Image (cartoon, rainbow, N blue to C red; front, side, top):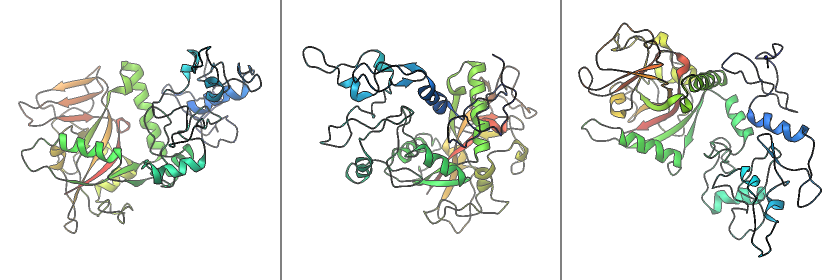
Length: 381
């Protein structure tokens, strides 16, 4: 089917009451919807209704455009065998299978079924009351934006937010950083990666703060489209994206504590500039005047190597670096300097400088701005 040329980047999502603009595919065409959630949800609203096998009243649940046999998990779980055990048919297995999302409310002692949204997304709780109580009673991680509700499991991986609304609201404040509490899984994962990838024979610093970076929507969309295009072109899951470290200059005390969360306006502060507008190949050489593998954006899988490039104000007792999502795609591994490169060799999407002849530690280089985005600000001592 030919793409609809009437849709543009300013076209609003066709889902009722949605004000987001439509998604642009890597081939340049525009969808009718802002994402797959509303694309799938519209099928539920517009498809001819088949009646639930159990209640014989409500329309069946539709997941990813596929019609299931029941209106929801309550009716599905009400179907019993002759011996009295509950049965979920094979077709019902198409419902969300996230182990954290259960048919029964997650609150201890509650036997009510979980709440199902109109788009098919399942909560972990039966009601707003039990959802709110989970933060206090169960130690569940809170939404990074509102801090009032538990994080949602929108996919197999927990979201940073309690809802899509909070996720969209956070984008309105971009560029910004959100603190991750030190007992949250995100803090522990980033801290562990920092320690594991410190390869220099020096004392491993302590991570004191981890911040989630919220980038401008346009930059996030550019990155997502590029990542998808590399995945399709190279048949590599996620475009072979990896988390890589980058050390740079910090002129302010951003991230030192919860009171230092506002980006500075100093043009010499490379850290704040990257958080504001992501990485720019055009900035290459402004600090080091040399790149072993040409004019690109340099990161490393070695946190201690990135530390060599970190600089900060004397007023701060801490240092800070960035952990980034980098789309490596098809990688060309080089063992000798090639400083004249302005793009990866033909057939490749990135270059990795391997330790050995010229390097003591690895370097990963991409040559497009949209191939990288900052994910976390890591403050350490």
